[in-house]
Image (cartoon, rainbow, N blue to C red):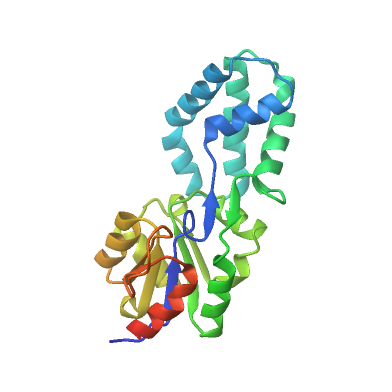
Length: 236
C-alpha cells in the first residue's frame, strides 16, 4: 500500500468548532446595540432574505473577492433593517459589531478544538503536505487567519469559491490538482460520513472519519485528530 504523503482536512467540526446561525447571530448583535424590535420576526425575516438570495451569494463567491462578499452582507443587513422597521443608523454599528464578534479575538462563532494544532504540528514534522477542503464560503481564509492556522496549509479550498461541494468528486480533484497529489497517497479527514468519507472514496482518496463521541477504530475511524499519525502508520 502506498504511503500517505498528503492529508486534506475538513474545517467545520474537524479543525474548528462553529456556532453561527445567521438570523440568530444578527438579531443578537442588534439587541446588544439597544434596538427595540420583535426578535422572532427579525430572526425569521433575516433567514428568509438570506435564503431568497442564496443563489446570488453562491455566484458572488466565485469571484474569490472578500470585498464583494462583504458587500453582499452589507446590502442584506441594510434591507433587513428596513424590513423590520429600524433606522438605517443601525447599519454601521451592526456591521462593526458583527465583524468583531465573528473575527475578533476571541471569536464567538469560531474556535479551535484542543487537538487541532498538535495534530497539524505532528503532520508537518512528518513532512506531510496539508490542505483544507471545506464546504464553506469565501470567509474560510479569514477564519483560518484569525485562528492562526493559515501557515500550516499548502492549499485551502472553499467549496463556494469553486462552485462545487463535497461529496462531489470534482472538489476533491481540485484539491489534488493544487497539491500535486496522487489520490492513492492522500488521506482525507472529516466529520461527515457522506461528504468526507464517501466523497473521498468516490474520488479515489483514502479517508478517516472523525467522531469525537466514539472510541477509535483505526484506521477508518478516529476520535481525536492527533490519531491521524497512527492512521499514517497503519496505512503507510
